[in-house]
Image (cartoon, rainbow, N blue to C red; front, top):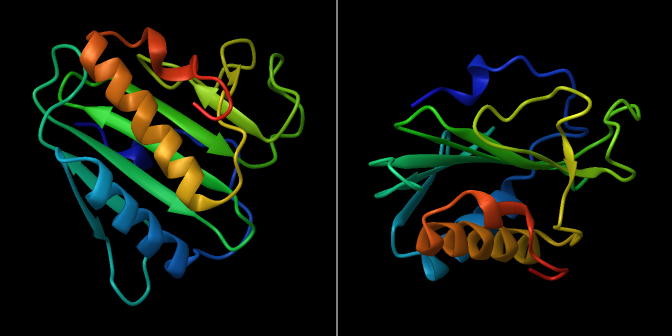
Length: 160
């Protein structure tokens, strides 16, 4: 799997890491997704919630979702798997350089989670609370998992 930190990030999340939000997200994931195990990278001073998935999408044998959430309610849910497929849902300012995105919420599609201005899409996730965003991500991932396809990952309606 590819480390999320290996990707060139042109935009940053605003605010400090929100530990209580990451703990809430962890609890939602462990309650809703039987294939997932979620752990903070550092329990007292986390920067990311690492979600190990016992299976991946399509031909991937395993996967991981790295979750970041800030006190400004900016977030990143970054999926990476054993087949080097990456995609992510994010909410943060992007200086209007994504041609197809009008708000803060956006989606970097597979297979590379491209940050090219013409490839980033408006996200179907428009929620703000971490519980609802997490449920939406899990639902979209689960639908794609059952369909054995990446196509449903950004096609949900609000709420997905």
